[in-house]
Image (cartoon, rainbow, N blue to C red; front, side):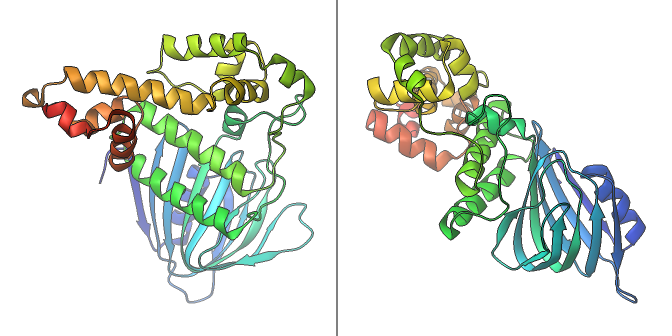
Length: 316
C-alpha cells in the first residue's frame, strides 16, 4: 500500500455503510436479498482533494446526506441507476464510459449502483473560485448542471482524474498536488455548465494595462515555489481575475498561470544546472520540486524552452 492510500475490502453491508458515511457523508445503503455485499475501495487523498476507485459486486441502494464538496463520478463498468439529487425533476441513469457531477454540494441524493467499477473524485467547491471568477461577485462559482457539455470534454476530464489519482499516492511534493488539483478544477469548469464568467467586462478591459502585468509578475517571481492561485495573483495586482487574464493576453500573449509555469520551468532549469547526479539528484525530483508531476510533459516543455533534454542538462 502506498503512503497516503487507504484500502477497504468487506462483504459486510454495515461495515461498508460505516466506511462510506465516514469518508463521504452520512448515508444509508441496502442490498438485494441474498446478494453478497462485496465492496472494495481504494482511496487516495491529499491537500483537500480525493480520488477513490470503487468496485461493488452487488446492487447497492444509497440515500445520502449533502456531501459539501464537488463530487465527480466516472463509471468504468456497470451502471448508476435511478440517481436523483434532491430537487431534481426526475431520476437518471448512467452507464460505462460516462462521467457526471454526482450532486450539488448542499443537496442530499439517492439512487442505486449496479455491480459497478467507478471512481469518485471530490474537492472543496472553493477551488472553483481559485481558478475562475464568478459572474456575480456576491456568489461563489458553482456548477449549473451535472451533464458534461460535450463527450470530448468528458473524455478530457476522465484523463485528468486518472492523472490526479497517480499524483495522490502520497509521494509527490505538495506543490505537485496543488497544481494537479487546480488543473482538475479548471477542467471541471470546461466540462460542466457553470456560473464562472470568462469574458472581461468594460471595467476589466480598462484595468488590463501594463501596470497590472508588472504587479502580477512581481508577485509571481517573488516566491514561485509556493502554491499560487489565479485569484491570489489578481488580488496582488489589484484587479479581477478576468482583468488579469486579459492583461496578460494583451501584453504578453500568454496567461497568468502559463507565465507561472514558465517561471517554475526556469527555476527547474537552474536547479538542474546546479544538481549533482552522483549525489542522487534526478530530473524527476527537480521537476516535482517545481510542481511538474508528469516527467514526460516536463521533458517536452523543457526541450521546447532550452533545446535539449533535462537529463542532458543534469549530466552535462
